[in-house]
Image 1 (cartoon, rainbow, N blue to C red):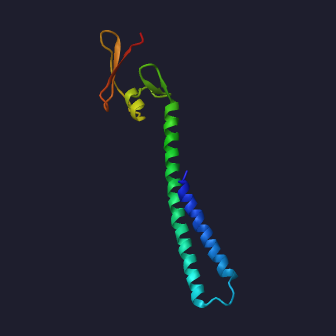
Image 2 (image 1 turned 45 degrees about the vertical axis):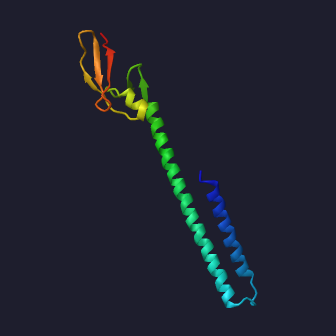
Length: 139
């Protein structure tokens, strides 16, 4: 949400601009041309302030939308993976993901597979963090 001070400033500028517009609209013929020009200049300045402040609010909202999009994407990724006690796997994907990279950085990197050793363990190796994971081969 945009900073409350920014919103308050925008509302104050809008009120100032509206008050100046009303003053110009309701002014008598008695106002001199110079006074009218001064009030119009103040109105234009107030509206320019509103425009700049609204641009700041718009940028804050764009940043928040991007942050929400990233968090939703991370949540979807996290929900699509299952953890088997050693490795993360995605439905329909036979190659597991590195649990260290995923839990540390929310990164999904496939592991390299090395056929089991003489003790019946298969080895998976992460090329990113260099961790190795051993899992008992299903016989």
